[in-house]
Image (cartoon, rainbow, N blue to C red; front, side, top):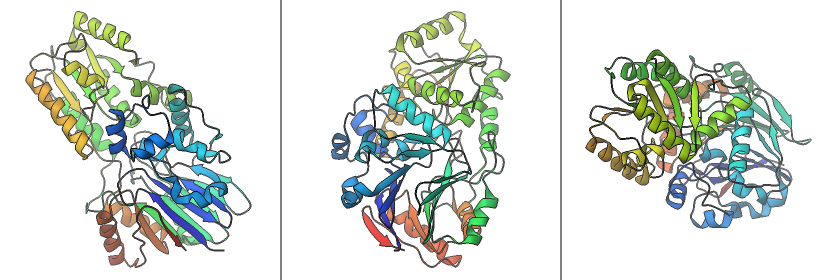
Length: 444
């Protein structure tokens, strides 16, 4: 019986990634992510799950994948396997996992801790067992299906490519990744195993196409560290507040920010619920040890208390790292800018956005509003102190040459980007590309 693939979500739109692989009478779901733009419209905040309660509610808001597309496969699902801990890949599990109560969630250790944190934080219970599997390990799901994690670099730790081994061939799921040969934390991507898989034969490569327009190589995270040094160390910040905001899950970036804070001889405070969630999840599995260098506060009363202390002791004695990089109205940075917290910006204070604006309408509006407020307070803004965690075309070329897939299926963008990647692959000699819409099925 051939392998059948259903492109559930992440093909007609950029987010809400999810793919189902059917082998005989068993199905594995790879990723179960939120569609972040619709989710933010529904929730008001990309990290807040306190408003959403049910799968039908979020489905109506088009904020997560529609698993009605595989209704005839529901009783066949034997595993849910997210590739990493970003919400557009794992965030739908708390709401949709219970549709498949007998399917364990198999994921890398940090992804498992993030998922547990979300469930605990939001008081959500799911029937699914969470199974933590090491990087570059293999898990035998059944007689016919094994899952292998191939370690790779991205903007969150413990990201993996997922290889689905079956008697009928292999499917390699390489959604979010980049090839960073100088990672700050962790090892380089497992190029040797990718080549071995290519030698063994990969029937289908499902691959991210978000940056299929970019004819370049994605820079190493070490470049972002140098960019931070340029704006944090090499500017005159005497007597001035310095606030940095970035993705709460980007532990490697946070490590670099901590290093810069120590060089500046500033006490470092992390402010915000999501920062505590991701950092504490990493500390529980000894992935990082920020506790000795950083104080973390998530409750409003504690945040207001430490900010009053900073005002009293001197703003140039502290480095504030807080939530709000996309201009989220309820995040700490926006609340400070609106004067809702007892910390007042002064002329010449610094705000560093160690991120890029995710280019969807709601984020662009929120960031524009935030920056206008900051500028009205005389704040000096540093934008885009950042490098991407996503592969560009040179990374894809390297992957294609390592894996040499029989066919390619682009994911994680609209069809315009998928066609760009297909054209690029065709020029390299890979002529078989499946351009999919959400909900389509193909037989390999």
